[in-house]
Length: 250
Length: 250
Image (cartoon, rainbow over all chains, first blue to last red; front, top):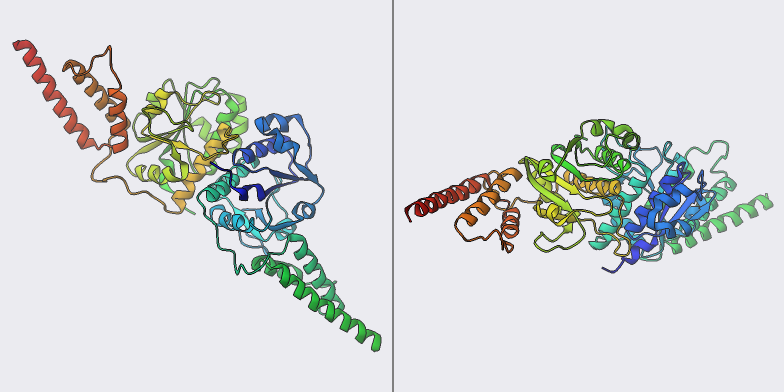
């Protein structure tokens, strides 16, 4: 059995994990399913002997793990990010079942790295963290006891991705016409929109309403392409130049 | 979301588990996916505080766990049993992927309890244990590192069963004409065949070849029905009576 290439493009991101044992269990779960990219956002204790012990034969995944300070850094360079959450949240994509989202994540991996983001053992992911992702994913658990251990949740998602990869289940990319923009491209686009909307007077930074989350959600859902980002930013730059000139002239 | 009834009919059987922590992790994994029947065959240490601690909120599953001495006892009353194994073994059903077998296990659960049997952490299941089951199941893991933790393996199987149950994926029962025989019925049938074949002189107990494993595999694969068991045993009884009479007469 050849290892599916797509799985090497999946980044497992653990945001603020509390227990080093769970980091080790996640590394082991990943390796059994052919995943290798582990990113830790501000882990409480890492490296740690308990992480190494629970990783068993997967210490190579632990050793290669990247430790970063923010989710933003963890998502750099990804073309798609999915947040693990069971809650429906305002301004975030509604969570869909892992079996439904996995084929889409694998399809995007043809264009670059795809992240799956797991929250802290007790608090899960913050609204801001879920909003930084373009998809929300849930494991359909027993409503009366939905408390999967962090390592077990990583195991299920890694298994689901592997199963779909081996069964050749890929979702068609929405309007797959060009190269999908990376997370950083989209972040810069959203930041550009915000700046331009403030300059133009359309957005009052004191009363932002929900313009920015809405825009972010739109671009995430649409899987905006690199070229579209260039067009939109070109347009914004022109507007900004115009606003500047008008301000100067008045 | 209503809990699918089929899941309450799934028995998770852990054969000779060494680490009580894994028993707890299995209980937690089961409960998150709506499974509740845990059977432990000759566990090394149980009950144990580590089992309770790893079970987290699923101590009810642990408390209700049945401890037995043999796999035979664990399988009593089941209509189908599936052995977790990655190896291909002589005289055993070839292992198939969990995603392929799960719909079949759920379909059988309409007729009674269905067991999924997990082996010891280090040694897995013995050939005899795999032969006692009618199906063999594997989790398609990384060939270079296939070492799933026991609790993680239970999590994946429980997830796969739940996913199939929620997606309504049931396999059609093979020739679903009547009531499927239970494990004990089939065991009694196989024992009856063995006795009759010895009495008839067809089977030499000193040189059994592989007659009994072959018969067992046949009945397992065919999902023999209660009525068929009655017919076959009736026939055997007639033969035995005939053999007796002939022996007496000669």
